[in-house]
Length: 264
Ligand SMILES: Nc1ncnc2c1ncn2[C@@H]1O[C@H](COP(=O)(O)OP(=O)(O)O)[C@@H](O)[C@H]1O
Ligand SMILES: [Mg+2]
Image (spheres, rainbow, N blue to C red):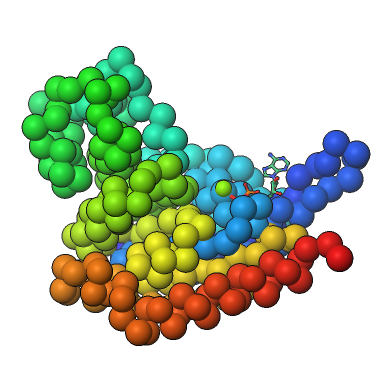
């Protein structure tokens, strides 16, 4: 059972004028295995800054992040990251991309290929192992990125708008793939989006953020993802009256907090 805690995490950046800018203010968040946490908010509210702190790419200016009781001091194989731009290596095949990290860690070829095939099957890409990645569609490339991050068996999967560049249909089908993976692997997932519908569909815990300074304004515990896991019918879940009512509530919240933070 993994446990990730953010305690009073603040990040300030220096401005070109010599001042400082508070990108993230006193974020408290507790996440356990099996939680699917979605951070939702307009651009500039500190979502990527928070993810970068959890990933260990950035040190908080104050506060602390603990994974299983140990302070996060830098990147590690216990946290896998998926970005909007997948950053695959175009000169390698699909399977070579997925096994790359394992190869760097010195794992034997047969073992890393077994793992890579298993993860590619989990994202629905069996049969594409030897294709060059540049021949794949954007959605398939993003699935290779997800398989790659799963290959090192991280405790935490950090996803920064991984579906943001995809068309609506592909985006919905990959949401379903991600939920099935989550239900099977029971990892901690921290997922960023600015789509309210995507956030509601995926999250067990939805964290609504607001800018100036970037902060959490409200947290919701949700179960629409579990309804999908039980029924397999995404459209039915997304058209439930409770889902639609929650979408309106969150849109209102985002609009009201965003308006407050805008200069008059
Ligand atoms: N390295 C940096 N230096 C200065 N300002 C930054 C840096 N990274 C992010 N910011 C600023 O911090 C705020 C939050 O950024 P970010 O976390 O990327 O927001 P989001 O991912 O929610 O769009 C933004 O105003 C952004 O311009
Ligand atoms: Mg961002």
